Image (cartoon, rainbow, N blue to C red; front, side, top):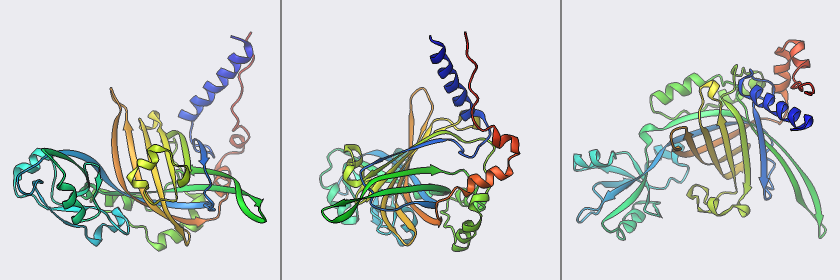
Length: 348
């Protein structure tokens, strides 16, 4: 191994170790963003993202005579808008006549059926039609509102684009986007946790949002990052690959954001979290859409736990580095001067 390659490798190993164990610096943790296609929308700014989710899973069910399914269903209520969106799709299990069915399938009244085999269920009529084609058994995809929860975080997006003249009119050319998850601790996190323990969704108030507009950059960050890296992929709908086109949550979306956060085991976070934002609308300082989060736990083999629901991002400020400036003001001068990773000396 040459002196140059050894030195380069040692620098990279030093940086990786610093990323994993050092207290948070201005950049929090390493993140990168790739853009595919043209968004044609300035999404730059500081955003408060609020997520409402519930676990989603599939169950194999044996058919029964006459009704085919061993339960009764009804339409979704308006109380599910936060979790399911403005036009919720699916049917809710209203009654399970045989108690043994609950024990056999671990399904309960209140569970929402959103798919029968591969058929999406929008309403009771769709559900009944889908059951007509089942044979000895069928699969149902179920979402469980009884285990719903909310979470919130700040997101920082820098957006730049070039204008290109084509045939006498200007169009958007090269877009440059950086998407960063911030770790600032929100002042209402205790209220969100209380709602989670009560299995209720938490809706952030207008007053809380207004308060963040003045203080977001000065909120404290944890001493150690829960993540060691983040990779974000922003894809315009016309550029969806086959897997994204097959994703039911991305139907009728303008673009998708696939965010992969790798946990820091030294901060008690193992595995990785993959979040998929399906952006449906952008207006009046809000981005609204579907959200899917998978937690890949470490085990003898990967275990995926999926949560599905909605997200709303509210723009609270223009893009800036006020958070970095505020952090540097709290640092001793010597720390600001020594942020760069020192290179190792030449080794003979």
